[in-house]
Image (cartoon, rainbow, N blue to C red; front, side, top):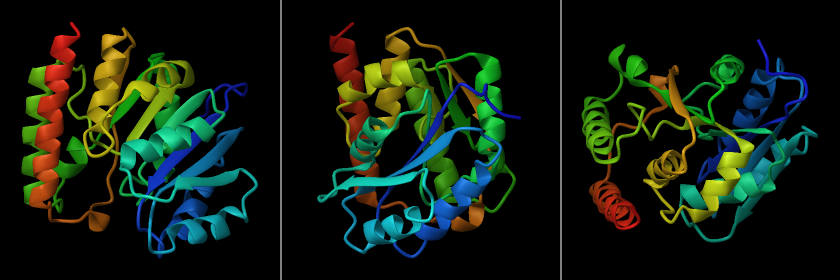
Length: 241
């Protein structure tokens, strides 16, 4: 269950304030990727102020295929992804949230499905895992509302855009990612909208979720920012039609 041997896979892990866990998480991703012949792990620190970068660098020193990049000031997950992708070298790029809410042990299977589908982007869908119980009800409700709004507004061929596990072919990603303007929560949505607008093929696949690691609260400021950026993206895309 692996990609063709000539394809190199880059795992880009955006991270913010995860000093206590990032070392173990890097080790876990490296172990999970063992079935893949050629891979690298790029940890991109989004200006953490709790020692995350130092902890990541210490763990990466034990793995020749792991690298840590980042910036000094917190700029948002989207900017961390952009920096991580710029440092990557893989033919296939996986963006994986560094908190590992989405277990890395499923990565070889997801990559196998990506290769079989022949698409340009494969988006993880955690809806089945959310229905299985234990996922905070407020997060479930907000996720469904956001998914409905974005599907109607942007006509994307996926049911979710915010799941922190996505796979991309390198060329389409490098073409579109530099144009993404949103730096924070809605960067995933803008990236997929731009890929669709450029004519690239997008599909989704079910992924498993470790519910115990997911937070139950959503800050009002986060909701406001997501709503504002989603509306702003809709208007920008409409003007460019």
